Image 1 (cartoon, rainbow, N blue to C red):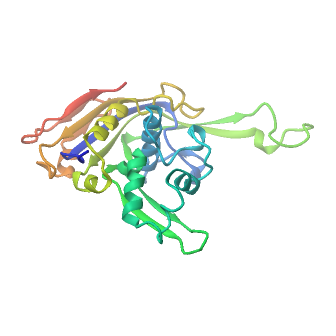
Image 2 (tube, one colour):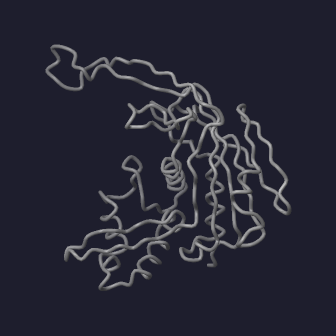
Image 3 (cartoon, rainbow, N blue to C red):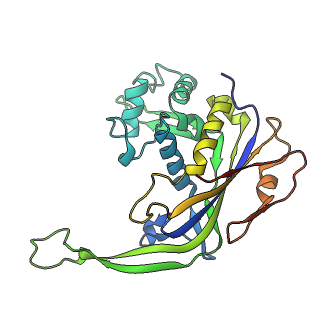
Length: 277
């Protein structure tokens, strides 16, 4: 099957209400913010949710989270060797190009986002197979500085001890973003897709799951319905090189604090606007 035939840019506009969209473990798990107080959801977090939704849709995923793991492999190395075979990841027996091709054919997220296979072998010579993916997703940022509410909580039982008295771990904090609109941008490169085999059908698969990016992602910090994709803006160019740069395309979108938006005209490029799930 041929690779991606046309350049694609996209944007995801999503809302957060009384939820912690992406906690920072180095800051007491408070919602991430930049130095100006704007909320941030990292690209790693968004890729994790994208992988999860792809996995829900039945796609084979290499970087699976422990909670959603669908096989018996305890690590990435174990999954790579168990599925591909140890010989594939042995540089003396398989050329890196052939190993990369096999990995891309096997796992959707590898051919979309890329992956670094860097493992030490039993012979201690090791293997390093870098795969650069054609799909890039930026970190999301809020349209305005966010308001964070912090609430002290008390557990009803100690997590440790003999039960004679409450231990220090019965006290804790929960943080939430009261209400905010975030926007994230992304792009798909046909030139890089030629190397991984990412194709038009794969692009349509991602397009189908983006509107429901936060469905099935509920937790104590993110109750069901507290995060929602409002719109997905999908720009499909007419060639592999595209009519406009990704920077120009992304800057054509202006999002307002209430979630409404404005799209500047781009010569020859009209986006598809998709409602959230």
